[in-house]
Image (cartoon, rainbow, N blue to C red):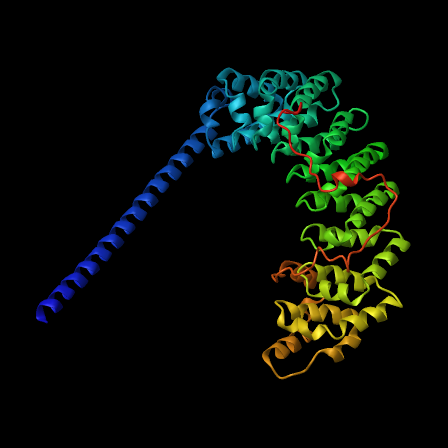
Length: 458
């Protein structure tokens, strides 16, 4: 027994000593790092003060060393601002040291180049484009820092036809890659904001021909919306019709659905008619899907009165209301429909929902859904049972709490649905069929155009 106690004491003492040693090592490492940081910081301050006291000529002779870090680049920007009439000399010094391209794509140097582009002469700007940007256009464009420099460069050359012709030749060769890249897609946005019709038609023609690639990509779908904002009436119409014709393929796309919603909000009658008719063609599938159900609100908002009444009427039967009410995404559809329903459909919805509403208490977030429904139909309050259980206490708390009112409630509701989807997609009994006269090809209804690697744009 004593032996075991001795062993335990030894092991405990060893662990204590080991932990103390570890703490000492950690503290010593921290102190070493702190000392090194102070040394580096002091050296930076010394070098900054040293360079700050230099004359302009001496500064330009050492421009390659000074521009190697953040503080040096800031110092050079300040000196450039103070001596803007000497901007061409700054450029020649960088050219002599062969650091122009390096600074263009550098995390700190790109700001120095952008400041330089504000002050150098037009001849030097053209020389910079031809010697630095043109040979490495793709590399610089796809670089997050280089793309900013090109955007700044566009501000200087957009009204100079000769150099813009060369720029457009570069752009056309890599348009798809530039559209789809997170950094370079901002070059397109800058381009269409500065250059107007007919000089920007190369962008709009490309978008119309490659609408599926652009509308369904994470970055380019945002650029597509910007194109629709900046274009003239003819250009907008061209893109909207291209988008409407493929809308059935992108209702269920995580990015394409936003492009459709934005297109509907522009209220082009012809395009909206095609988009809405294609959405209603496979209505039951669209409203029970996580992504395509988001489009329903815009469809309901921008469709004509007769179509809206037809939608409200088609959903107004007990089985459909029941399925929608207990469905993960369908209850969102039902709520949006309830918000615009008029008589006699309003009374009919109340009749169908009344025996079902109390059952929502047992669902995740069901109490929040009850509150939302009762906000539209106060008379349903009487159908919620008032048993003294925890669910009812939670329900009373929600009904007395204003945090679910307005936009905050809608955001919470949309973000917190976690129940299983039990909607019957294959039910012929509840299938909603809308007749339409568009030229939609049924054989290609569920096809998705693939990205072909042998496409001319790669």
